[in-house]
Length: 190
Image 1: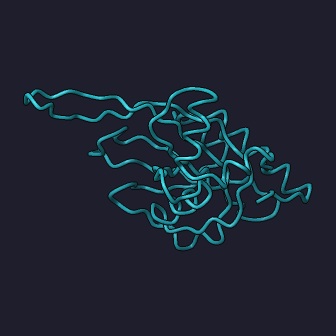
Image 2: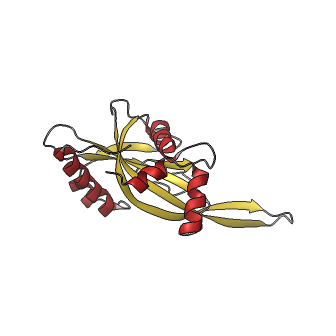
Image 3: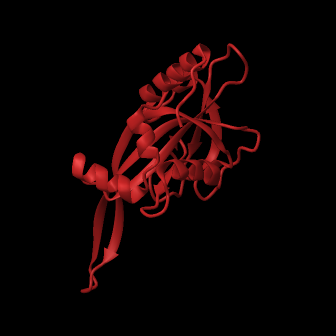
């Protein structure tokens, strides 16, 4: 279940969140959101998580499996809206419920720029990615935008432990937490 603070973040725009976090914690240039999409096939079964693969020719992290993620525009988009947009645009799925958060991920995105004197320079932009566990309305229409992701697949905790996927422990713990919450009848705050 999302805490009050986490719900407040979902109602911030990208710019508002950057202003908050840059004064409170560290300096980041961009905010991304990630969605650990979970599904339960039938009562009593283990939940599964959707992982997608970046194209082999992707500029960043080619060929890795990850949860669907994308950039939050600084103006206009609330984080919750950006989270829903990312899942819809990348996987053609509609988020029905934000259950809780996963640990944030920080990394650098590199940009090559040409200076006025004609020399090239690589600039690193620090990024924070806010990750959430979500449920979707229906997964029958799952298909990835091939420019962003390929090979969408559902994995349970046993399959995840056998693989080499970033944030494995957090994903497994979130699946366990979500299972406990859904069996106790609690619902997420929105």
